[in-house]
Length: 189
Image (cartoon, rainbow, N blue to C red; front, side, top):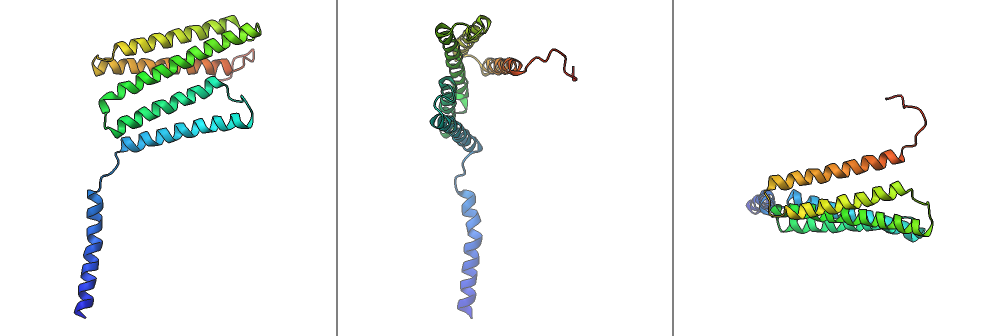
């Protein structure tokens, strides 16, 4: 009986000790898990557009595929920084995003110009000018961010907010372009 009691006590102590051991085990930070999930999402989104292009060639334009590739690059950088616990280099991710935005805007402008060169009138000249200006704003925004690399975090955060604001404005403009004009004001106006 005493051997059985000793066995039960040892077994119970082993069960109690396990949670303590788990508490001491290194736990991935939320930032690392978040960065890993962002990378997985970006890679999955890229695979999705690549899959669409495999089914129907050029169903997703190369400029859009490139944007998904830029998203993967940015997510990889964020994961590397999270792995290295490099919170101070968050600004570099923003610079990389600005570079991706510049590349995307420039590609859109050049593609629209090239298409109009092959088939005149495909894009309205005002749209091509808008794309050119979007590329110029994105280039200047990146240059401005690069010039702030050694500035205070407050100045860098202000630039990051401007980047977000420009992206929101661009999305609003694209959304307005997609909304057909019906010749009358909607009921909510």
